[in-house]
Length: 338
Image 1: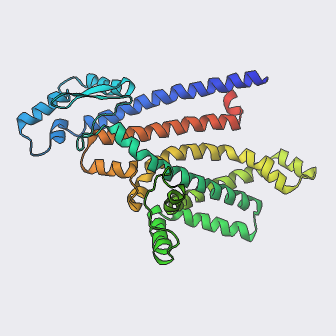
Image 2: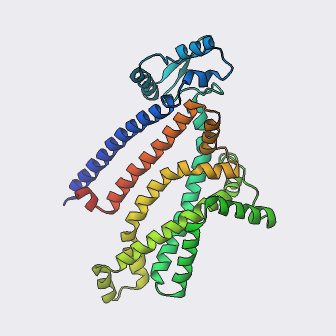
Image 3: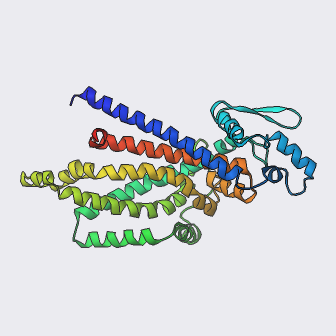
């Protein structure tokens, strides 16, 4: 197969994944809208508050067009996401730019702006933790496979099992008590923007990174070890050994490359999942990210914020899965041909 044909095959595969991701996002938006705007009951009463009179509730219902058919209300929501929309403020109108996810019931702030201020915190937490768990997990898995049957492998296997079984809040609490409280090696976490002070940004996030990374690293270590052992048992690896190729070269240049495909797929998927899973870490460490804001919005029943944040998290999950499919195809061209 020529290089051009392989490129066309990969481009077509990527295009199919993009179209599939768009359809999936549309289905998610329909489901989220139905769950939060239909199931809760009287949205106008929730928006206005418990002390509103029936006349005030009716006025809010008219402003939000809640008397319109459901499909028209969803179409207005979707149109706002795609092209923006105008909202009534009672005394005038306010334009909400693309992508418009509505206006908060509690603060009257546009949901998109609210999410935009919280995303850097969540991204900092997820990307840093993901970097650590990949380095620790893949490195541990490769070492375990290389030292199979020896004391090193048994010790690492025990540690990975313990890490998998330990909840994140237990690890986070222990690290805060020991590292921040008793040893005072690190400050108690507080978010410092990267643009203000990169060193303090990393120092303050190191503990949350470790809390998330230690658990995920255990999963990646087990996955990498299993994939490495499977690859090391293949015929071409035995041929390399028969020709006298050094074992470190076999591990690094041949076995690891073959074992990385499932790791890449899991890593891209876990990035999207970690955006949703950061809720506990942000709440535990007091980080003002998307997860913590989502918990607050649920408590006060701020439906536009809940819908917007769930939709954004869903977007990252779908995007991460699409990227995982493409990276998997790059690592293993058989996926494109299948």
